[in-house]
Image (cartoon, rainbow, N blue to C red; front, side, top):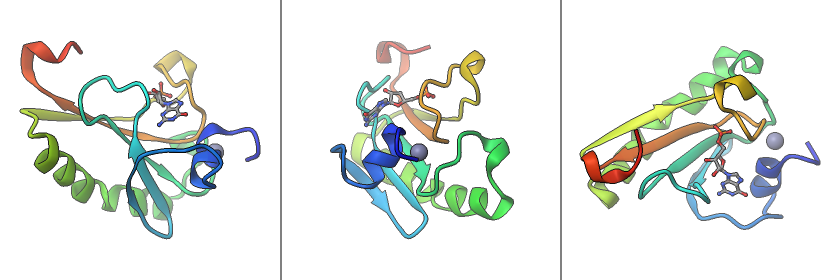
Amino acid sequence: MSNCIFCKIIAGEIPSVKVYEDEHVYAFMDIMPLSKGHTLLIPKSHREFVYDMTSEEAGRLFSVAPKIASAIKETFEPEGMNLLNNNGAKAGQSVFHFHLHFIPRYGASDGFG
Ligand code: 5GP
Ligand code: ZN
């Protein structure tokens, strides 16, 4: 989709710090991290919401979540990690291209939640 920030990131038109890429998905560091190591995982095909994805598309995306979470855990050594997906403005979604947040947690000092 021509107007979508995340489609532009996938196309390389907007720079990003890549964490992982394969044929179907792309993962990169969040530009305004809620905590150190905050990462986003997105499908390469433009899908706005979880409702728009097939089981196969969702399966491909979630199948790499353990690998990405493990890499974040090894690199940043958080005490915990939230995986989060917002659907709709009411739910806090601000970029309307499906994304799964990986938010490392560092205890009381991480300034989030
Ligand atoms: P949402 O609120 O839609 O669940 O999350 C959108 C996320 O995308 C936010 O955490 C925001 O910081 C991130 N974001 C928005 N624009 C950009 C961008 O241009 N580059 C990167 N790396 N992250 C972005
Ligand atoms: Zn898009």
